[in-house]
Length: 482
Ligand code: GLN
Image (cartoon, rainbow, N blue to C red; front, side):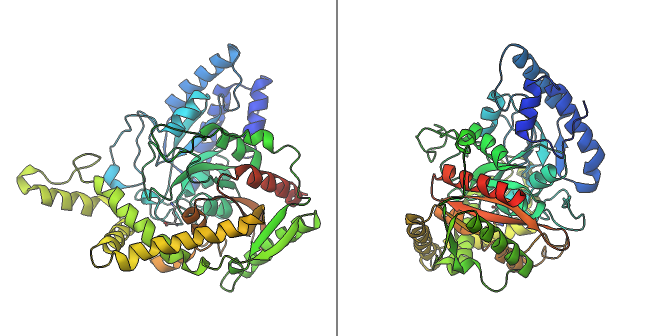
């Protein structure tokens, strides 16, 4: 049977394998064939592990023959190049980690492997997840499969492009300030950032530890729920993970309805500066939810105006500390030798190894943490971060979910922001507050511009309110497809 990766969902693949329509080995081969046929034009994958994937697929087929039937059994997944997968490279799209091979599995990788999933390869990203276009990868540019002259978004651009380009059923990605939701929006996928503490970060290269979260990029809300299910829960290796039972996310979608759903629409997210087509599509989606029985209300998140500044202080401060470990001694590629002196070796290694954007963040972060500026920048940012979190607590006191745009624009042309950091930072305006507040958020497709570019609707839920958010998203997805 011919397998069309471009339209195949996790659920359909699972059901087809249960019916023995095809085996995991055949499915993985179809993914490898699709990559071979399409990726030279798109550039989503950095490396493909054909041999390892086929071996894992055969093992999954054996498990199935022995009676196993897990949701992810034999399902191929594309992995963002930020996760440690034992025996595979993990470069974070950075030259400084060239040649590094992961010695162990990140907890999320161990979990999906236990469930029988098959990592197919490593997909591209902005270096160390810093960016919004995947143009800051040290290795290659990734093109948006919907419009090849445009970016796929970032930092998880390879993940979204692999899914939208018909080269993956779904992908594991990370979101520190929008890196799952924004590329999902740009490529027409579903992307889900879980609440902080829902998913383990162990074995995921840290960018900003108080903001990073792992989540899926998939084709449907249900697929996102299936993947979230597999990766969620307490991990003794990550003390920030919540020690509470994980709800059955996929089962919770049953009977999802917009009737009576209380939707808050924050007025600060509908201001001038957003592309009019994006605005119109998001408004139209919210109107349809209202017509289907939701109670839509304008609300206020009054500290939104500080979000970008607060994010770029907190994220860079944490990044400057996290990236100190890449010094040529412990990880990756070393430049210089003992004869030249230790400091010179550090300098050469970091000067040659890090790209421009990463250096900019390290310098900014070091500055905001330096004595004399710490109080003026970092401490004030932390206080403003509390206010942003409280805005959401107030809003969720009488709203089930919030709906907003994901990004102020659809996918833009390649090379149009790469040398303009401020412009690219401003593109994060609608996504960073979610991470600052630790709440959950997702992007679902809500239509296309006249030029055919996908636009995402952002649905936000309270901390650990994934069930409410997923139910709203599933009902909304159904309504928008009608
Ligand atoms: N675009 C944001 C940044 O550049 C967010 C990136 C992310 O979520 N990893 O920092």
